[in-house]
Length: 315
Image 1: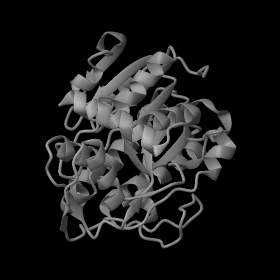
Image 2: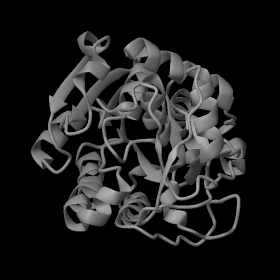
Image 3: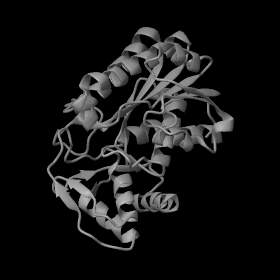
Image 4: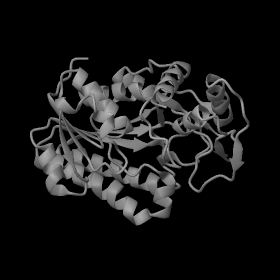
């Protein structure tokens, strides 16, 4: 697509989604600056791109570095966050300093540097366990974890900065993003990356709950395209969008699909559900289709195959 902006800052740009976004921006001819403290991101994710970007090692709470990185940017994609729900349950104050104050600092850096638009990564976690399916953007939030509240905080501040200061903002409620480069080393990483690693070493995965819970999984390259549309389309400003596919897969079925790809079948180990975990989640993406013209290009099977191939080559 032809981008309306020339220079972008990606916070958390060395992370899983962030590095794919950097790659997508560069492929469209955009000048890119990355800010990442490398606490969960990895410079190896940017190995093929490092000669083409400006990189700042820093925390989004470091306002001086943040404002320096935002200088002369037309747009900010705010991906940096503590993304583990259990980690925010264990450390609600520390995680709030990153997820809440960090987001506020990003918005303030945008205001001070006259950045036209900020696209924020929010989360479907804000819906909580509301039984209504699929989840649509007009539902009342029902956060069940510090993480969900922290993301909702960012959405409210995004709206305020648009209304009060004229900084255009778009909030994207990510559902379950998967794909190459997702780090499986953390206990709280994405379930697909963890299952892929288990399958590659022919070990059973741990499933929390009975495995009948389901998720709306969206491939990372579709998420990149969604971000670019949200950044580029004028009428996206001030909106909140679900970033999903409108389809779901149960966790038990997911493991069966991955173990078959690996050429062996083994039963998973089951443990009790974790605090803050959501049982059922699938996105209504009608708003994105109407406002942005977004439809997922990757089927779940195609995305899973591409992800599995990456894990096999990596290992």
